[in-house]
Amino acid sequence: MGTITIIKGDITLITADAIVNAANTTLLGGGGVDGAIHRAAGRELLEECRKLNGCETGEAKITQGYNLPARFVIHTPGPIWKGGTCNEEQLLKNCYYNSLCLAEQYGCETVAFPSISTGVYHFPLEKAASIALRTIQNYLKTSHTIKEVLMVCFSDQVREIYSEALLKQSMEK
Ligand code: ADP
Image (cartoon, rainbow, N blue to C red; front, top):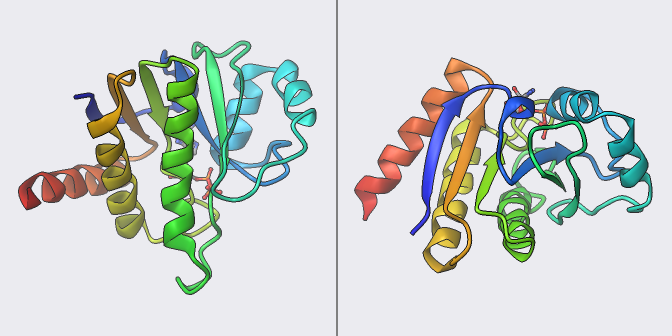
């Protein structure tokens, strides 16, 4: 079974078959990790994204990685946190699940995720970490292609919360 590794870092520097972008539904770039990925990948990424006609929240679309060390970028718009009554948890789960499905379809063995929706979209971090890790773990049980999933945390605080959530999850079984 594939493994989950939690690291602190900048996802634009990660060498993986695919990195995941916490995009918005236009897929035309934005702030946070989305802006960083577009800056590092270059104009060609935006040009390819323009042809995709956006993406619904929780769905995922794939492009080349261009100037990034990663071969592919999987773009998934996370849910905006509105208090938890607008299906946010299911939509966040869909982001991870649909991104992994796409990675598998494209034969990716290593996939790196940022902490989707926990920046300007304000999804509560602990809840997001638990949903992310559980969805990835469940996916890895059945995947024959994906060998390693990296959770790339941008700060020590985020890394600690994901590490605690992973530990908690491993003790539940
Ligand atoms: P969202 O709109 O989905 O909330 P953000 O980009 O605002 O997306 O934030 C998602 C997470 O990505 C936050 O934890 C933020 O600190 C983190 N982040 C920002 N830049 C990077 C980067 N270069 N690499 C990895 N994570 C990043």
